[in-house]
Image (cartoon, rainbow, N blue to C red; front, side, top):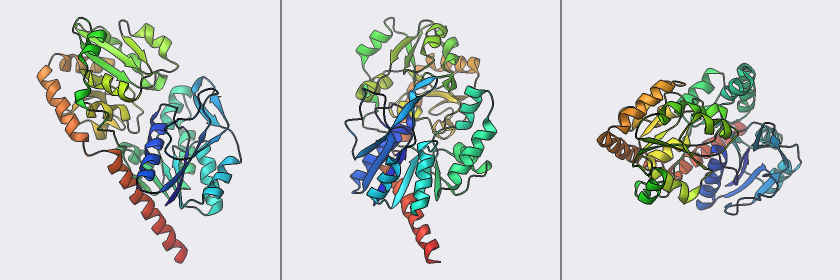
Length: 375
């Protein structure tokens, strides 16, 4: 099968869309298929990811105003030319917003089936960054995804949101996790001593440092006795968070095996963002055998079994976050039980298993298109 993956982000970018697009390309290659990636060009001087498993066509881009880590594709003929040259059986649109919209239009003109992967809560972001605009964001989401042969939602909450807002042909497609890289035996006692020299319980957050993540909700956790907060990631909110989280250790952006070592060395993982359509870092923490505290909203509802693999708390509730951390920090046996159950719960969610589910979606879309043409 020949596939063009049109993605709003791709490595060296570090985010959920980029990671999922990379894993999709790798799986297609592993299964003997022929993918091509079309993505915005990274910032000057960074260069494309050297580990890309297939050819990557880069489209000129500019940084998003106020958020330079995000690149927005400019109009270019390269996208349509790439589709024509690659002759795909299906076009995979990863988080379509700007480049993906153009990819959808090009696929329609060429008569190529399109599968759109919903990955970003644009309506929630509109509320955070604009103070309004949710209705307009949903109109855009609906218009983009209605043109796809199938929209794939990463969680039950995301699927329900899409269906409630009139998006047709929605199916569930979760995300995989690298259970070889992220595993409990990566725990590093030397790292733990460096991060918490007085034997504190280590509570970690991993992700973008941006307003929509609400990492400031960890301020109360910083005041708990015997607890050290460790923050991994970067973004526009880093300066404010350094002031809001006294005593926290900021490690910056970490990836690969180094990130896996940090995950496994935590006693507890906390995610604070209420707008996650999936939340890959929660799943990576669970694969690392670490119990999770997360908002009872969006993707974590599918991932965290409350009272078994972690605790779900009301979104935006700093007191609830602090009390959940206090309870788990004080209970080593409970943490151990939750961590073991967390690891067991994700062992079947490998990228290979999830990638095969994606291939099934492709096959069903292609079969439906053939049936429609024959009729």
